[in-house]
Image (cartoon, rainbow, N blue to C red; front, side):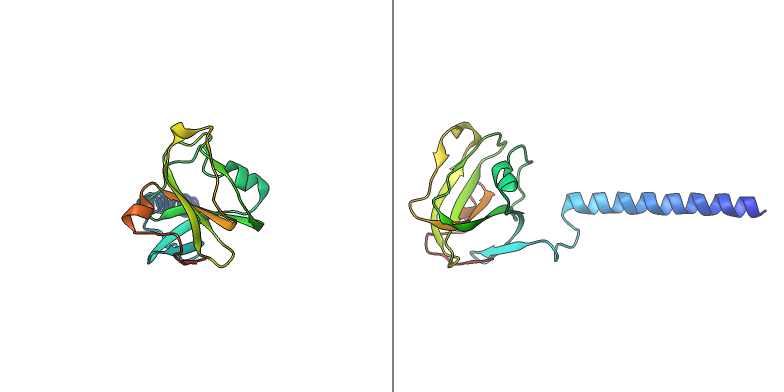
Length: 153
């Protein structure tokens, strides 16, 4: 009898773990998992959930070999000092908008709809920036983002 309870307990535990994994993966792929702890940026009244690239290795990798971004996703590159940081589309699978942002958190330049086919062309801002925000292509157009707009980081 005790053996039957033990077997039933193990089966129940495995089912509970399996259901939990299934629920989490289903919710994650549909975007229904709570995202309060993920870093975010606000621009043009839109909240963008971002991956942070704040080390040389992460900045070099960027979105290369990444799946396409959802409408509310992006990557925020954080540099230690202001500079004219160039970006290219090496190993990219989808087009993006690139926004250069000053230390004061103001959009100082942008390149819209940079395509993977543009590689090896590098996109360089006209002025210094401390942050770069990569967003889905046409985000800037659809949300009326302009040079001079403020960004909440």
